[in-house]
Length: 124
Image 1 (cartoon, rainbow, N blue to C red):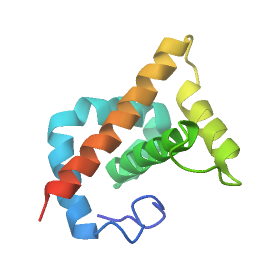
Image 2: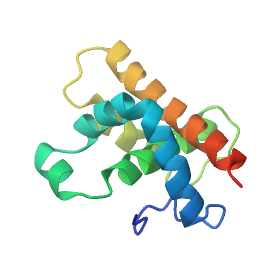
Image 3: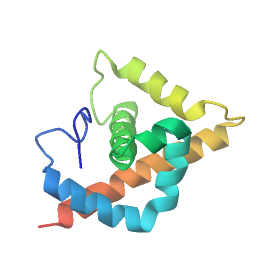
């Protein structure tokens, strides 16, 4: 597993071994959600050539969770908050025809991040 470049996972609060275990456990139950997000975020070519696509999807989901905390006032605004929000919405909203489709993908991302954090917290 490689978390190089995954700034949300590469923070001091996460241990690489626990990340791997928690991600494996989460993927067993949520492979459809991972697959759905990966097809939105990555092209087929990138998906086939990227061995750490699950880590990429998880890192994106943690980013959505962090952005939601900013949107809801739990975190203070940073200089990059507006750009981050627009980037997330643009990535998920590409080729979508309704807000319901976008909200569905945001919910998947947010729920994956919450479940990952809970599994990570419970691992010893």
